[in-house]
Length: 141
Image 1 (cartoon, helix red, strand yellow):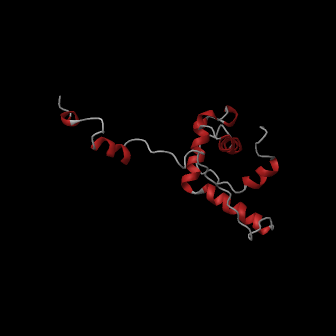
Image 2 (spheres, one colour; image 1 turned 45 degrees about the horizontal axis):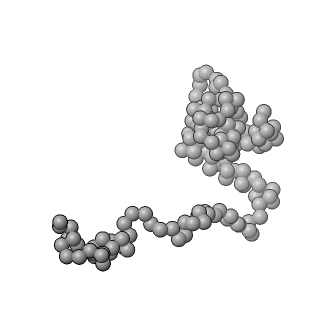
Image 3 (cartoon, helix red, strand yellow; image 1 turned 90 degrees about the vertical axis):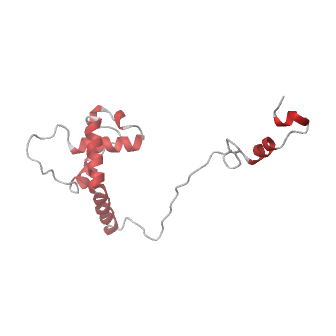
């Protein structure tokens, strides 16, 4: 069990919310607990799926479960059920809602010059420079 894997108490609460497999046949090689711990590892680490450690199962299997549950709304249902339980236990204070999401721009981004053609360079190209005279200004000669 990894340092950030679900504890037995956490798994007991989460396990009852998970969908039950409906397909008969060969039993799965990796447990849902392993796969969910792999999904949690990947989202916490922020790495590509291919970097999920083998102890959680093949990355394709971990990603497959994540994607399948994302598409069919399982993750959302689990979240809603956990939220309802926490609310029933008085663990959520609905009076305060703080969104601390920020998007920082690079310090030089605010006054950056635009690349490419700008108006000042267009004006400079369209009028002859003060040093050119006569036919040189038209490019002849």
